[in-house]
Length: 104
Length: 320
Image 1 (spheres, each protein chain N blue to C red):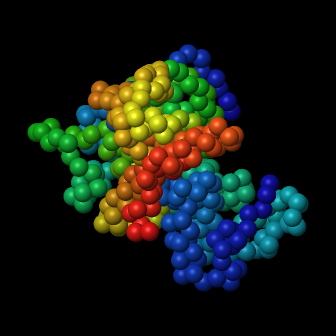
Image 2 (cartoon, rainbow over the protein chains, first blue to last red):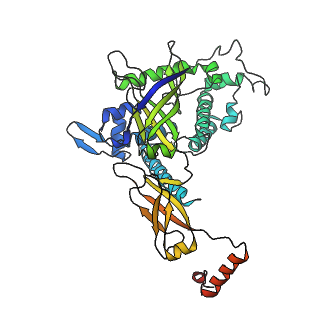
Image 3 (cartoon, one colour):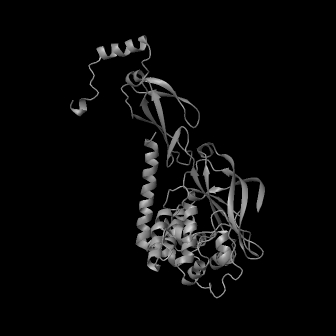
């Protein structure tokens, strides 16, 4: 099936938003609140702002949380393993992009 | 339909034990996981692996699969036998590995185990459990040219999105969208198109479409976050004596002052000439010394004169 959608769609850069609530994050990652709380406790996600209505995350938490959920599920990693893998993956990304700058 | 040799996919013998199969899955899953692997076909390999594991880890499915033998000879097409599946019970454990909204099984798998219907059920549950009033969000990845982020502008992109059809089967729909690229978007960031995900359930709002962006390599600039790097070749006398040279930047070429006494690797920063953003990135110009070729008498004489005039040992730091 194929469909052409005429017209021009414009969107926002999600990471530039700071207003990502727990419920929205849960929905976007298809996980329950407990998982998000565990991610925060393990340092996988950091809370940008906490007010009486709940936690707020930076937009960048979305990608991190989705990768964390996939690693947990697909590789059967436990939480400390997920946290370590994420840190190493980010370090690897940084190094790769620096290598790209140096190479040529 | 192509026959899939799940044992070959997992790199195990046909008489492999359950622990061996699990071990092979773990090893290959780490290697080909799309979030971890940079292998070109990682996503396809990971899906194939998940499918193979789905069959081989379940004693019932594995026994049923083994009944098929080693498949047709190469080039022959595969059809499940008419009495396929008789006596086997496949309900129970649903797909797990790689089970994102669109767990994507091959025709081969679906002809044997009917994965589509199960995928569809999972899709529904995903939406239902978390926010009843919101259509499912869709996620996609695109590879953009850097110019789109530097200048903004629209790009046409074709996305493959999972969808549940009227009979409850999971199908993939190709959707071509014309998207305005927000100026200054960085690799790894996401464009959100509100309301472009799955349609709204009764009385609710439509899902959103999230497009994660990566960049194709650019012929001039390397990207590091919001900073850009450009290698700028200069002549030896431009580096030694200082000069003002034309330099390309994303906003058009500028006159760049090369300080006297520059050397290869000298980094000059052009503030705010990187990726545009609220806090724009910088452009780093890294100098490269380009040597004029000594091809005729005149140029050779020039090099000889320099050798005579300069008491220069390029290997002084090596102690020789």
